[in-house]
Length: 307
Ligand code: G3H
Ligand code: ZN
Image 1 (cartoon, rainbow, N blue to C red):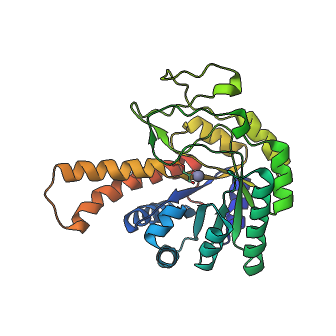
Image 2: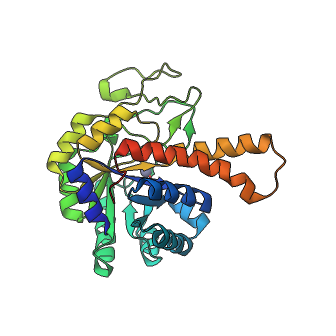
């Protein structure tokens, strides 16, 4: 099944599909095994750094094997491609989803490159989905120990989103409405300052506000935009906000940091108390920890038994 059909089904059914970011075999195994057990559609994502590490042809080949073995449709998405060239290279290596992120370019430049990516991909295979990005999703997929300040200008403008989708021809759009990449450290509760948005003083070292999505803005975008909508920075967002987002048209939620944290914490703990030297005896504990996060997210997104 192609991704637009998967998204259409999700939108009609009021659920979302998880995109889980990976860069190695253990993570892929964890995600595919959970998806198989729960009969959930899934998307594997790789940023430019992640795909450089695992190999572009390698990951598309590995996904194909898991697809055959599980009988699930497995999409491999080129997450946050920052240039036409990296998007093209991913398509040419067999990726079945291409995300071009031109959000750091001025609007016209973002539109121009996104359009070029759409034209290239669609001329080769109209079934491969292209995701654009408008508005700035701050932060990267790590544990932050400082507040992140959101500016009004970071948020996706609903009218501009409508225009961008029409002119670029993207199938889906990543939007910014209070979401950031990563989670917040220390207490591990997600915190973000909305700063200028509400005309508040930005506290230098807390207390920080809990991350809060602007659902009204999402509704406005949904009404105007004729494309599937994507929530980036899915780690650390409250279950209530995720559910509200899905209710209001989000069909894909990207998760990376929470998987990374589960992976690294478990590995660290295991190695701290074990002399084990056989890799395949080390990884099961790590895989189990990643599986737990994936299962929790698939249940939250409502994507189980949707094959
Ligand atoms: O593109 C990847 C995601 O947006 C991941 O965000 O690290 O906050 O889960 P996250
Ligand atoms: Zn992202």
